Image 1 (cartoon, one colour):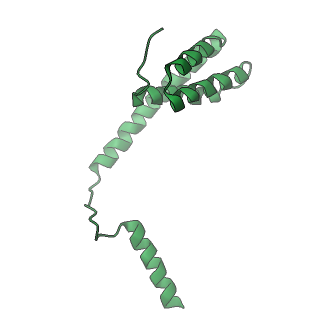
Image 2 (tube, rainbow, N blue to C red):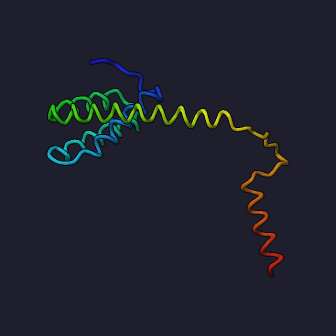
Image 3 (cartoon, rainbow, N blue to C red):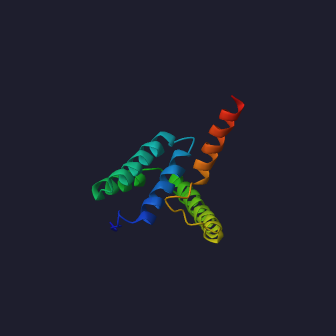
Length: 123
């Protein structure tokens, strides 16, 4: 069995995508896919190699047609996640950032202050 680093965020994200796809399976074998999904989420929570091996064995007990369907859907979901991350990352990296010093209120604090000022003037 191939060993993966369970400390790698990309590995954990891939496991999460697979678990999400398994949760969406309906029809025959759906209960089994939910159990495998829970095993995968346990891997994410514990980062345990034995948990990963258990989840891998559980996945391999699924009907071959279900495994193929899940593989195709997980591949599509992973590609969509990468595309979305690149779009959001590009958007975030192009947005100008103002330095927030200790004396500069954030927009959240400004909004709260404005709200409390309005209440005082209305009273």
